[in-house]
Amino acid sequence: MNYEWDTVTGEILSKRPADVEIALGKEHPGVEDFMALVSPAAAAYIEPMAQLSRKYTQERFGKTVSMYIPMYITNSCTNSCVYCGFNRHNLIERVVLTPEQIEDECKAIRRLGPFENLLLVTGENPAVAGVDYLEKALQVCRPYFNNLTMEVMPLASEDYARLAKSGLNGVVCFQETYNRLNYKTYHPAGMKSKFEWRVNGFDRMGQAGLHKIGLGVLIGLEDWRTDITMMAMHLQYLRKRYWRTRYSVNFPRMRPAEGHFQPNVTMSDRELAQAIFAFRIFDHDVDISVSTREAPDFRDHIATLGATSLSAGSKTDPGGYYTYPKSLEQFAVSDERTPNEVADAIRKSGYEAVWKDWDKIFD
Image 1 (cartoon, one colour):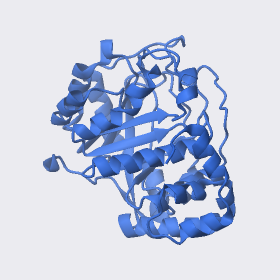
Image 2: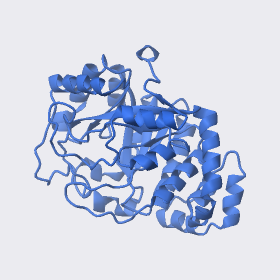
Image 3: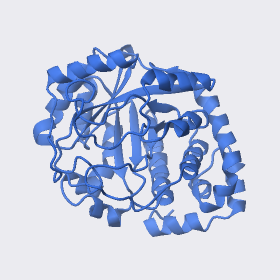
Image 4: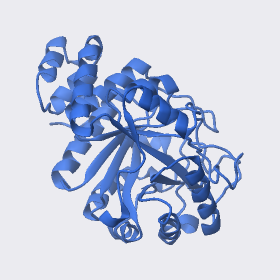
């Protein structure tokens, strides 16, 4: 199959209702079927897609939703991503939390709810927040949480392996967009400008034997149908090569941020639901995460139809839970409910909010 951007876009747009019906009739659709499910032709099939997505999700995950919370530990960054509040040219106060401050954040999060799944998030500045810093952060957080994931700059395979020994269970990395031609437009400087280094980082995660790998694209940069199709292809490749690893996918819609970048592409709630249903039908085992970028009503409904992980109580600024509660956020949060309020909504829908799904003893 040709993975060129324009070719994939053309194939998606060429799909017809008959292709969608064929895809819905397969227990394990392929990439061509995925293209049909995200195509404009599938818009009329949202209801059967939703029901099939719910069926596969309940068969694999039961009626459960995993809860997690992010902790931003630094907004220091050498990149110039045009859409990001942490862009190095933005005149904001840069924060690198100390180990003591990280521990204070851990304690504050524990008071918010019984979280065991923590996502550590950083900007990309290896000079002040490199592997030594990340390793120390993991060591500080480990006594407080059973499952530690990082959304961090791409690293060498040996660095991922080193961090795994300090308690790292998984890594989330946003490719942002798979459009190689336009990638540099959004990432003009810094290590993130290197498309190949970033996209090949997932192989390095797999080589390091990480328990879980998270892929993501940012909706708002390029055509969403093509971007998530390319991500589906990438996921399929990684599953075949690193079959012991678990996988998650993320495709958040762009929210307002410092710098006032306006999205090039908009995605409606219905289209986001279509994307989630397509991924669930394509891959029954993948964890689908929906963050607090999305509105409460959408998150409550999608948690019963295909999503399997929700964040709650999120602060998208370093030290936002205790140390610097009023500093600049990376992006605006839409769902501002407390973790207990989110969990209550999940229970009211007949599902169980799962706070712990991993134990340190498994490492």
